[in-house]
Length: 256
Image (cartoon, one colour):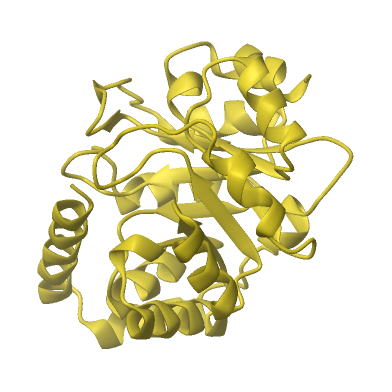
């Protein structure tokens, strides 16, 4: 599934590149206003922080929510206490777009993450051109050379990179890269199976100066509390927010 998602996202990016050249997108990315410092926004605090996600659908659950106004939802998240906004921009299985990200960026003052299956420089330039402050790189989807190149490019453009892992080996690769914001996803993106204990097993091996992000397997406040107790600085939440009242649900998660 991960290979399919990554290949599909690359195919769609190449189609966009036919319409808007790499040189044009690169120029727009370089000319964009400076990115917001996401590390500062997400760094360790007295309470767990939340990246709230704009997410219409997923391969594992199908349709989740219409979200006709992604910027309005992001504004609700900001009002509810989120520390950053994640926007799914993959169109085939998650029904998102870069227009969603642009709309969200124009509405909120929080850091905004482009969450997609990024495997080529064009997609990184697109993210910054659309005013993303963070970009997701999934270790399992990339070889070491590509991972390092995309990580370096994201940094050169002033963005923070959320480097996502799902095993001890992938975590080691992320740390060797010098990642300062590391995610541990309870959902295996190859099989889409969940392992709720994964973060707790891997977190002790993540250095204290790295911001630890727990991803997936959150449906109620006790799940956030468990991640917090296991050492998470940040929890990324999508499905539970888009399928319930976003503000009250977010507030209940932040209250743990």
